[in-house]
Image 1 (tube, rainbow, N blue to C red):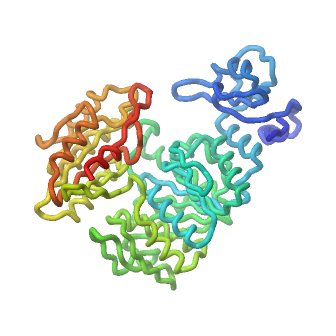
Image 2: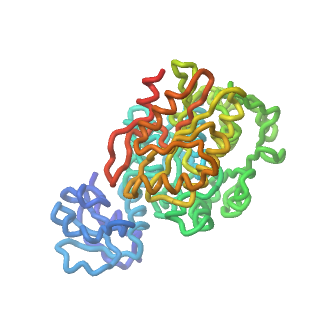
Image 3: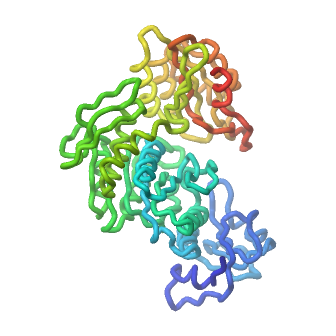
Length: 482
């Protein structure tokens, strides 16, 4: 694809500003990926600054540079100076790929917990209704004919607009995507045209990045502020921030709630080890729900997905069947029966709130004389304040805890474990330097009817140690015990 620099960068300036007439064959944010004819956008990051690699980009064939105006000396190619290169990257990406979301129905889901499960439920509903649908998020790109590759919850704007363009050209009609607070704060989705935005909930998370819980909220709120009048905002009224989030937008708002009969809500709800059953009341329509998912938090995720589908006007039977067909979400309360009669439950939970929901649910559905073993750790270079809190919650529900490394990144895993165990009040825990050893110990201890909860990594296939990803899979280990 080739476009003139003027075409893709004209909206960055006043009409009178002259833009060099050069042909651009690609847009890149990483200098190591630059090829001849590319436009390189230099973005200051938290660890490295793209401006330090402008020379490398030019040597690799960059035809023009967008920068923040920092003095990098005289360049041999045109340089466009802007106040915010991150914002410029989103604008340029959308222009380069022809604003593909104008031709797609894009459904954005944001919140601390439940994004992936809600997205998977909605994806199942839309596919069941006959819509050619793609799902973007922590599970990768899930779309017929596309490779499913793990990625950031929300990719950079260049990758994102490229994916939208490819999906549009492949005649997809609907996109269900998770929208992270980082993506909103860094303008990755600033030029995505959302038709529906859904807010699930807000609990303390990513406070290593956001200065405060209020800053975290404000990042999430950007999604709702950017909605046009013809879009729809859907919020979880059960969350303390739900109604506040509804006030952030000028778009029409729909609410769902665990208890408020004026919102979309469950009636005759029954939650057991066999699943979630009940009726969802949405105005004059009643949806009969039967799902193999378990837990009150998954009932809330179902409410969110049904609310979006209801707003889109999806037929009642298609919604009901779509929920029923979504029997499991990879790495989210995923159950594996073991040869010894126990069960392994794998979940991506990595916040205190998620621990309380997942472990509370498992304790509730387990037999009175069974044991609950919990394998967990905490990610490095992330909010350290949650580490002892997770231990405190795990201890409430667990028979025994197995503390292991979980993507220590650049931190010392022993120090992370030390901060975790500071939250325990008793001694029913063991610390392991190797996650494999901790998981195997828990599985070996388990007996018939016991539950081994493995939290934090889901289906990840690596450990991030000293900024290098080494192969590791909880799932691979679990499979050997089946």
